Image 1 (cartoon, rainbow, N blue to C red):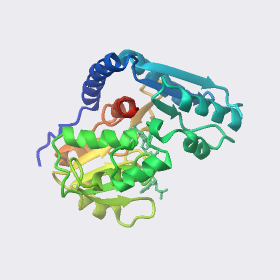
Image 2: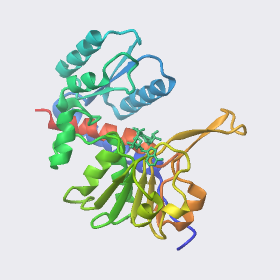
Image 3: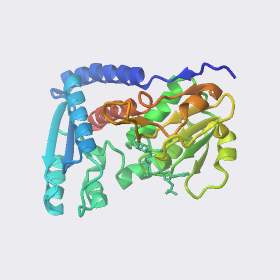
Length: 296
Ligand code: NDP
């Protein structure tokens, strides 16, 4: 296989999607007399969550969306948090609601997700939206990271219909939802999907049988050359911190794929950073626009 695979540029694709969202938002806002609105709820002071919420708020403003940000102390009670969700459900300016995960203990994250109006659940974690994905009902919301992975496969010209996809990881946020998405009937889907996890046997052989390998397990450099057959496409969802004294931060971010040894075998591959990561926010904005469009 060629030693120069297509490196799938998630930053460029994300920038293009966000620019399209901005144009669509302006057109819809003119028609409806108000912009699309996204509410983001942050509880506690986890630095990574705070950074995600800041970036979502900034992107909303750049796109001309109405942005509502609730930054709440970790001491907030379950009842108070549910009250805020209920107010956002009822707010006509708000089309999408996102409660940043993880919630500090002892808050019940599942109860909070269940309380969000499914028509505003732009994260796609409410049971109604999970069911719609399983049923192939396109009115529902699909979680943003799997949507981003699917879009990168399309953008890289990777054939999906009939392809064997091995997804490593079975979380709802990534692996399970991506499997449901790619096995659906229709465009950018129709794949034969195998979902693997920590109990799966002989992962190298399983992955070598795949046309597309998606790694979403959270283990640095887990996927090696022995996992990937020549000409496969590899999507690396993992974001892992490893110590790096040469980096001013003392660490750097790497994926689940040992990029240097895997890339030469691939037809196409996503880097980390700059692959799947930037897609998540683009798909969040796209889901918020969809919620706005679907609102009567
Ligand atoms: P979870 O911890 O929820 O799930 C990890 C999955 O990987 C589980 O299904 C687990 O199996 C499986 N797994 C763990 N170790 C192994 C192993 N040795 N062999 C095979 N399977 C294994 O993680 P998430 O799905 O939330 O996230 C996965 C990665 O993706 C993380 O690095 C995360 O940071 C990243 N991520 C990136 C996003 C982005 O925007 N790019 C968004 C979301 C996540 P089991 O079920 O058996 O325990």
